[in-house]
Length: 137
Length: 137
Length: 137
Length: 137
Image 1 (cartoon, rainbow over the protein chains, first blue to last red):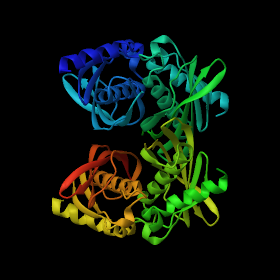
Image 2 (cartoon, each protein chain N blue to C red; image 1 turned 90 degrees about the horizontal axis):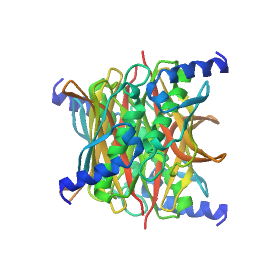
Image 3 (cartoon, chains in turn green, cyan, red, blue; image 1 turned 120 degrees about the vertical axis):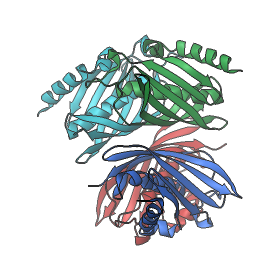
């Protein structure tokens, strides 16, 4: 499978997730061992202080981790668990979650993710995550 | 503050979170050291297999943890970090996230959360979470 | 297998772990879905402030989680991952880690653990943990 | 403080931790935002299959995370929480835990750690961790 095929298949999977479609999430990078997901920041994604709600950031991390794990395990996978640390309030135009598989076994992959906010052409790291993706038999 | 006041204040905070309003989340229980949040399951919250998207479950856990921590620390708090383990596919009518503060220090609280799916009057545990809530000065 | 057999088998496994023997760890409870491990607190287990070193607490949590998971999955298991929150400095006579399996699937179990310090007959919660135990084929 | 001072102060702190001394742990690198800790692998550190016990790996990760966080926050710090994923059985001559501070706020730092096993001059990644270090007032 070449890079273009990866991205096309990944985008089809994302398009089949109603929640991702509802959030206008976009897969902007996808290859063996890595995935990059973006979510445009609109008012409806915010919490009471005008920052992006943690739940949106954890969605982005979770989904990017799953794609990264799926890229090395095969398409039928699920997220077993993950952990996220929020670093800064997320303010800007879009969230970008970049995940990579650090380790891939036969049935599970361990992945890390950095979530950035893009604001006026500049990126800031707003959260980091780590989790386990598992093959579904 | 009695129980009724707690719930009223909690609901005002939830109502000021556009993302929670957008998800139709409801605070169904809130008191010193605990919080209970429900999210009605609709098609738009699903992933490609018809289950509730992990991102929705992590939103519910994150927000319930924050409310539980906030109930012992004061209203101005944020989630520093959390970890979630997904146990079963979530299928049903609504998600219910129940969190409690296990420990409260001066500036941070450590909380646990159980996320259930309610389906035909029965509840099933679909995820468990654990995290740190921090006072914002 | 009755309760007595469980505990005997568990103790044999613990006795075959040189690191646990070195720490004088003892399995004081073991049954289907739960495990209880104690470690006597001696000076060599401390950090620079006279508290039990976090690494000893994480050892106890990790091992109790693994036993609890193993009790529902079978004896050949390993810890895939875990997370721990430290709550209070650990000062006292012994650490007691109590773990239970919250969920058991075919190949993995999700467990929680509470770590206490026993001091003068009183117990204080010093850490909480959550993790995934996996069957080894 | 220059690099040499950092390492000297770090080694004094490590030498004041009886548990680290007992494990023969050594601080082999320490500077602003990073720390490198090694533990020689001896039989007493093993579990029942001859691999390094997970508790030793979590000790190394925890301590390296704390040193990395302390390097940006000041010397009086503690580990609030961390999460670890075990990737491979650890077999070799020594464990090496390399941690770095990904983010440093006023009162807490978020750090990541990679734990390697060194075997015959070759290194293998055996675990990854992520956690929060907090300033003690």
